Image (cartoon, rainbow, N blue to C red; front, top):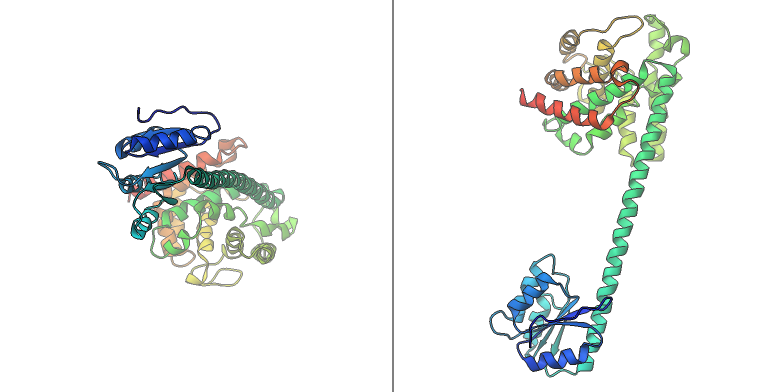
Length: 393
């Protein structure tokens, strides 16, 4: 007999018959060739070579063979992820219950004792091939469902992004300076979170969230400005003490807006981050901030990161009532406020990321972007700048 010979027919299951007795192979092949495509082998090594080249749908495997036994062939098949799912039916003269138990322990789906009735072989093949086909169909269905879930998840992510932009634009429509400020502070916060993710004080919290989610949540930090009167928000000069007290209320307004959404979707991490940032980004480390005069570690971590991002951008940006401050002066001011206005560890991370902050401030200006921001490029560059800053320490 010519081992490994076969004639493959489209849409028919392929059965590999492995037996060191040529007569047994002839009997099985004659009985089954009308129903299945038959491949044969007379030893374990040849069987493994055939499976490697042309994996069959199912294997009828003798146990006692010269060289590699059927048990050893089964072990090798189950060890290989590419062949582990091929059903194996042992055909053997061994009748001891321990032999049968070992066959099933090794992963065989059935165990038939010689001499066997060919109708029984056909029936058991039909059963196991039906199960195999059902399993394949279920796998394909699950793969299709996974694709649909990924597509739906992506759709929801895009929808969330659009909603976030729409919410952030509410503040932008009230203040023409807000749009670029919102985008820059997003990347400042993201850069700080990446920098601090291995810091012992911040590691546990930052490991539970994505830096990009935290940065995106930062875009809503001034959403509460929608509640500030126009004559104060749009005043082209410094505010009076009374007006300043009024504009301070934007933190509370933002919390009122976002906390309602958190109540509706209590498991939404993004909304919780946005709420914390909106409500606490004007709190100070020494307890002299607003609106709740939180102190030290009472201030949520997102609020501490946003505090530096917000102040830095306000200082280095052009305003109707002031020119932009040079980076070095802004750096000196923020480091001077370390331990008073700002968390000292966040201030130190900011100092080490000076080049990153300068890059964001330069790249995300109206003149630099011409109204278009390549967010993927900025994300990649921010991460690269953070790594450069870490290497320079």
